[in-house]
Length: 117
Image 1 (cartoon, helix red, strand yellow):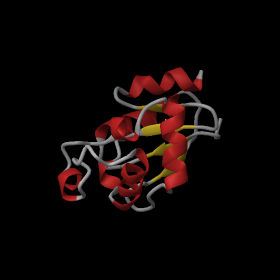
Image 2 (image 1 turned 90 degrees about the vertical axis):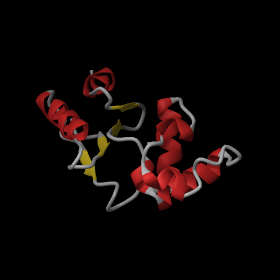
Image 3 (image 1 turned 60 degrees about the horizontal axis):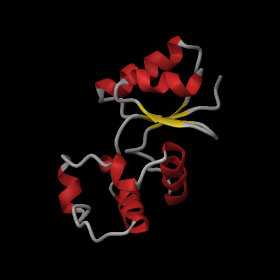
Image 4 (image 1 turned 135 degrees about the vertical axis):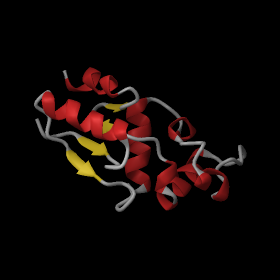
C-alpha cells in the first residue's frame, strides 16, 4: 500500500517509530518532511476534516513558535489558525498519517494501525 502520506520529522522519535510501524505493516507512505515543505492550507484543512478535529487540536502548544506566531490568541478563527500553521509548520503535531479517506495522529504510533487495516 502506498496511498498514505506521513507528515514526518526525522528528528522526532515518535515520527520515526510511526514510519517504522507503517513499513512493518506493508505500508510505504509518501514521506512529507513538513518542516522543509509545509502542507498547503487546503492540505491542512483536509487533514483536519479527516481527523474530525479543529485546527487548534493538532497544534504543538509547547513550541516557542506557538506564542511567537500569535497562535495563543484564542480569537483567531480556524482559517487564520491554518494560515499560521502553513507559515509556522513546527507548530503542527507530528506525525500525522493520512490518505484520501482517513487520518490519524501517531501519538502513540499504534494509532495509525486503525486507518491502515
